[in-house]
Length: 178
Image 1 (cartoon, rainbow, N blue to C red):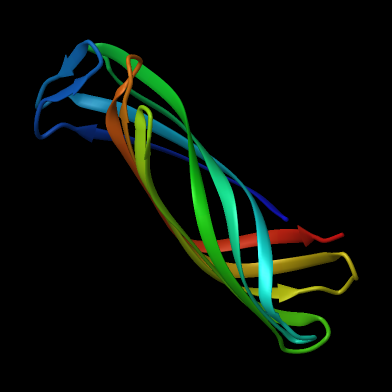
Image 2 (image 1 turned 90 degrees about the horizontal axis):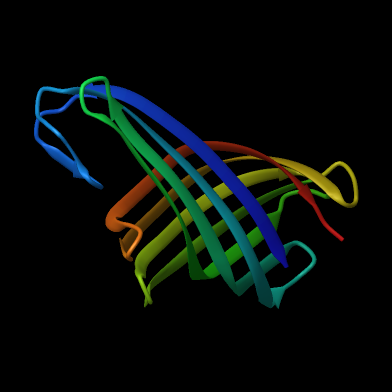
């Protein structure tokens, strides 16, 4: 079993080069707008190790990403618009781990799925490589690099649009095992 939570918030101020239609409002070119995007991802999965030795492991898993997106845009002259959506996306993952010593290991994971379900269609891609230090039997610490892309199209009565979120960069984490 694997449980992971990831959260990232972004905001920016820009002058629009083209008109933007959002909800009932149109933000015209030349308008300076403030925008925010808050993204959270809860991933739960179960996995099976098809190759496992004391110092190596390879496996495959099946899980669910529950992506939460909150976005807003505002300008002083044209008001504000905001929306939020929660999009559940199943995912398949592949993983591997190689122990360097009793306390140090290197692991990698790749998640992928493309799916259309009801009002949602989307694609989840995640690749990560980590170094893990486990000084205690059930607790470890890690550093790594990650590339996460979630591309969601939503066509519902509440919101019609597309959200493409990408994160590439370093990660730090704590692990607990039972």
